[in-house]
Amino acid sequence: MVYLTKTNKGVRLSLTLTAIVLFSVCAAFALNTFVGYQTQKKSLTDNTLEMNSITAKELSRTTQTMIESMQETMKTAAQFFSSAELGSDNAIRQLDFLRNTVPYFNSVAIADANGVIRSTSPSTLHLVGEKLNSAQAQQALQTKKPLISEPYRAITGRLIVMVSHPIYDPDGEYRGFIAGTIYLQEENVFQKILGNQSKNRSGSYFYVVDAKGNLLYHPDRERLGENVASNPVVRELMNGKSGHMAVVNTKNVPFIAGFSLVAKVGWGIVSQTPQSYIAESVQHLVTRMAILSAPMLALLLALVIWFSLRLSAPLNRLAQLASRYNRGEAIPV
Image (tube, rainbow, N blue to C red; front, side, top):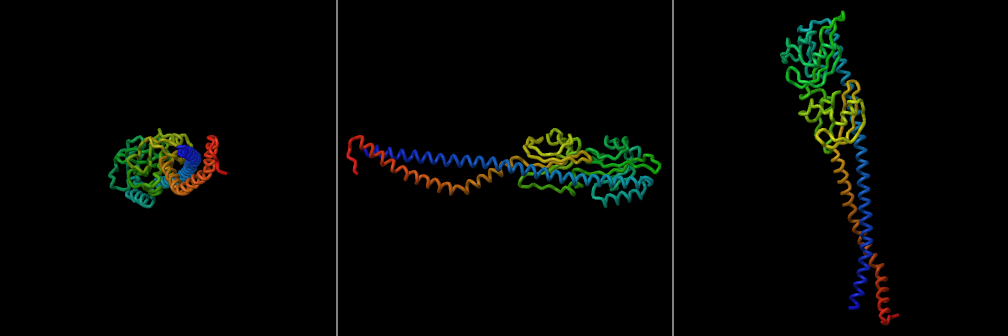
């Protein structure tokens, strides 16, 4: 019975030392893992924000160049039609030439000072003689200035953006306007210049909004023309700002986004990445690090337990001798 008691005390001492060391090692490992997770998450978030900002800036430069080229094309065409017959066969040939050589517009049309369409390309639109009554067409007629419209439903039923320029005769008399249209829900210049976005592993994508927050370009064509002015990033763009920020979009999905203003027309480009991708990437990285370090940790724990047992053995021996001495037993020298 005395032997069992002594043995139990020794075992308890060994287990106590082992538990303390084991707890210390595991706590240090957990703390390092937590700190590593937070550090990696911040680093990846910052890098992704920076990359999205760079992407948005580059796309805004591309878009601005494209818009300037569109407007210059319309200006040159308007100068040509300043003295030409707006509804002649020659006018139609010139419109066909313009549409086929300049990759910006799905269709081109000329309307006179009363808003009546005089020529179109392609001619298959069958709109000659139709009067334009849309708010966007009326704005072009009333202001008599170069305009880029917000998205709207045209007389054909298509969702379009119209780029127009007034036509004046050599005496400065207003004759009407020439307009190039972009079909937002069909193959268009945005897809040609900005590219067709396909799904990627990160879930990142970019989109284009006009000055009022209407979607001009988006991977989901069903959303084109939708107003997303309630999005905090879009509000920043509407206020003339560029930058980057974390945001919850209009679909209640958290993103980290970079955004840049197209100063020429007040449009905005947003490039964004789901926050879930950041969390999943960091979790995958930390898990991989933990798996790789597990064998080393197991070896370290085994060594720690072995050393703790070796270190506790003399203490166990001393405790046994002290107990025997207190009971008056003979202690071997």
